[in-house]
Image (tube, rainbow, N blue to C red; front, side, top):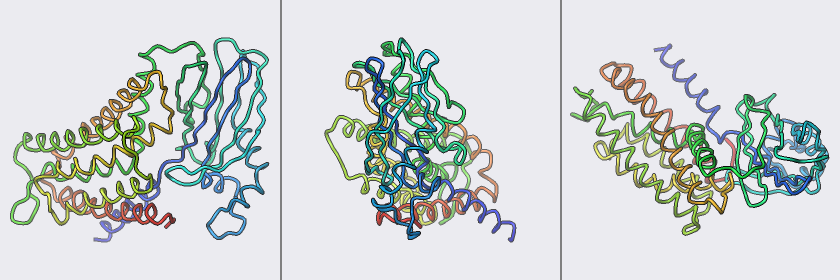
Length: 371
């Protein structure tokens, strides 16, 4: 029993460490002639962790505290972004400081310019923001040149990248946005936990108020197919509508409802209301998850000349990432379905952990507070 409690405790804390939105910054570079103009949105919570912005120590970062550290923020950030062309440095200077609200909190906005000796066909960038203190951090880049927009992701493994200023092919843009979609579903812990909460009982059937293992693979496969299809159709609808500007919902409401959907899906495994109709829950809440995907796609920047291409590519990437998770989960769950470990620890214990984590997200997002 002690070992079981220790396992549960460790799993909870390991999961909680990743409960919040992963650390990202949003970098936009526009190239015109030999001049690069940029905007860099960096989360205040990340800057506070790195250089300490909360002078009052009260857990709230004020505009005055940020303004007093403008020089330090600029020095810290710009020392971790190096631009060059033809192997010659492009010195950058910050021209303006702003504050902007994203779906996950307030961000410092640095606007800057960099002058290059000469720019021909490529631009090189080395990005190392927060990599020394948070190896999970990612820098999301949107590069604009003439009427063409492309995107990239900086990570510790891909800190230095070279970008062609030639017009990318439609296939290249499509593949780029597919990659973005795959990456987003893999780091979108609330989306993953919602899906897993729905899938955990797929290899079980409800009999006499208890979960029993299915005898053959087909019922489990069909259950998973219905859930994944319903979720896919639902979030594809709202992702498309939101991206095209047909429907817009407040981001806090969307993020809070997504957290609530994870709570509901997890509790349904403990107190079943939709035991054999979890695909209904997948569809209803999938509509809300689609708005969450749309927010990420908007943050990446949509090329207006290839809007449909980017939308389709991103959505297919999300589906590919989702199917990869299912492909790993389903055979493993089916193999373990008869065990006490799967029924008690994975389905019931795992659902309890997911419900608690999602409840924390719900409180934080709904009331804009940090637990």
